[in-house]
Image (cartoon, rainbow, N blue to C red; front, top):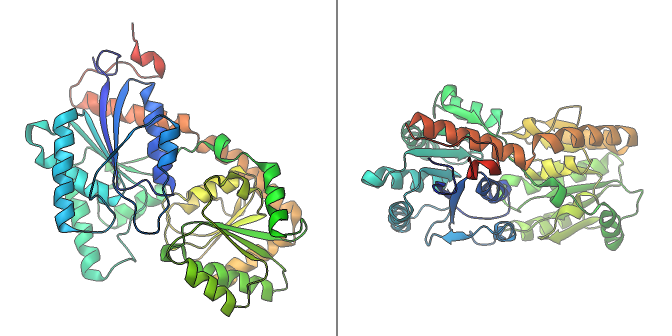
Length: 410
């Protein structure tokens, strides 16, 4: 019987890369958590893109080995992609997984193609998680339509489609990827107790940057790429200062847009009080250095920086895109503004700057909801339940779930 110490449920989990972000945390926590429930998982990942920082350390800290897939990267490369598919077919034939679970678009494409081409070794269950998508607003019309057609074709041969928020699901349904009945919503799980440590360190970090305790401080945590709208971050701060709010800005992260952001800050006369602190391996204390997080992204699946900010008891001002609405409750734990509207973002920040009680009230509401909603045990439970249901639908006998006891049902 599957899910026991004698016959674990074998999973091949594939992600394009373990870069900074929610998907990397998700697969690391999930792989560790399922090990206590009768699963043996191979976590396979490709290479980082140029300028990206690695989050493989999260997996390593949890004793999760990562199998490298040479050539697997975010960009399309026909030669490399064919080799990656062949490599994955080899892993499928070697490990004979009961479940193939792919995460992120590129891994979902090559992984599910490999499953189709594995012949009699095809895993009985194939699952794909959408941590967001790039099927609208990223490419020209012809390219977008080609990618949508690929996703629709892959969806027809996938046993379960998982979205990390209802909003991501609804967008994919509207784009014709698959009907709503084919999707399961499973939110991220984040080890917030670990990530959010360091409240007292937040005070020290402000002091180290010369930010007085009474100066309103806006934070931004992201990879410095175009999709995160770095110009809107600086534009919103400029608009906020023009409203008379002497706000500081702390930018945590690095990436290809950093040099351009630093130059743009000079052009907007924002050098004073704008602090580029770069990539931080331990980002937790920085959330306690902010009064509020600004997140003006063009697209988000589930914004982990917003989750971590709310867990730290701080409100969030963000664009109403993707799964952000599922994280930030409008008017309760923060404010949602239209994408590209820096004036609206500055107005919401001004309200928070002048109302300490509102900040505390929103921070407390967000913290209470977030710590429960995004627990890792809940993620593990949700995925375990989905896996066992799918295996049973395939006629495979599976031990009862419910935690470590599943590995020793006797």
